[in-house]
Image 1 (cartoon, each protein chain N blue to C red):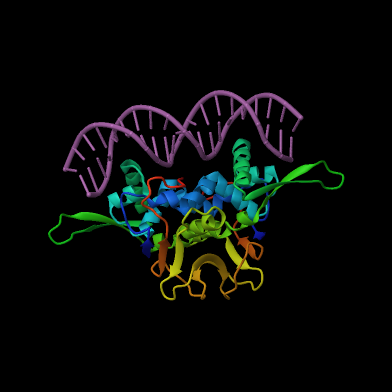
Image 2: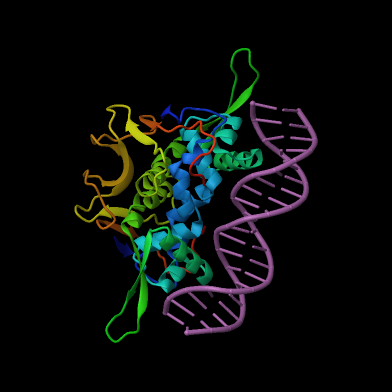
Length: 165
Length: 165
DNA sequence: CGGCATCCTGTATGATACTG
DNA sequence: CAGTATCATACAGGATGCCG
């Protein structure tokens, strides 16, 4: 991997301030957030489903659902089945669904390098073939960490980075 | 997304015990681990580079490097430049390099949904085109979260899951 | 320079109990 | 069922200082 522009190695100015990885981490860095998201992808929608299936306490589940809704990756919707009382359901927003590669990249890594006894497999509904998470360029080439360059344009020498954490 | 086999919705038995996502999280769930890994991908190799560029204290850097070496994603190698004293360097192992899609999936998400002022771009060295992290099946189809099925085979009803955390 | 030990604070999370 | 409130614990991580 290569670096270009403002990201070029310098010890005095951490790139983190502008770093999109750090920004995403503010949303999903906790274990509970990842597990709640996992269950959202696995089809959970009601409070108790999240708590029971992610094996989290009610308090943690509540806090995490609130945070994820606030971050815009989950959406809280009222719904009402005929004859039933009013309920809420939590659903992934488009931004939330776009976390799928991040979640499944973690799944894929353990399946390869620290596999559980019965590794869950991902298959494409359209053709039944195994699914992988991978880096690929616009031209369709598979890209490894040796074949990619990270480029940033900004004035990284400024004293007051706009965004930390 | 669909679930099949032992992963099918059940409230009494959390899938987490066997979950590869959780297993990977034990390696990279902390912010500092992710930042150290980021710097490894960005080319850092010496202790002080990690500490300075990830903006972590020496103690945290030390602990994280140790953990990541123990987890097998980094490797500590002695090396010696001619006329210099003996040093160590930390390098990504193949397992570590295989975390690239996970790291860059986080980068990509913030670039799309919570972009920093100067979003770093990924480009393929071979052809200069932008790089994305995406789900794709063996047949080459792009896969969305609606087109994928997660299947697990194991005896998930057992009382004593082999692997937690 | 590279790294570890100590102390301290903040937070993630569990346990338990309570409310609508 | 869907939470909220309170208390207790464990751990992440900063600050400081020491050591080879």
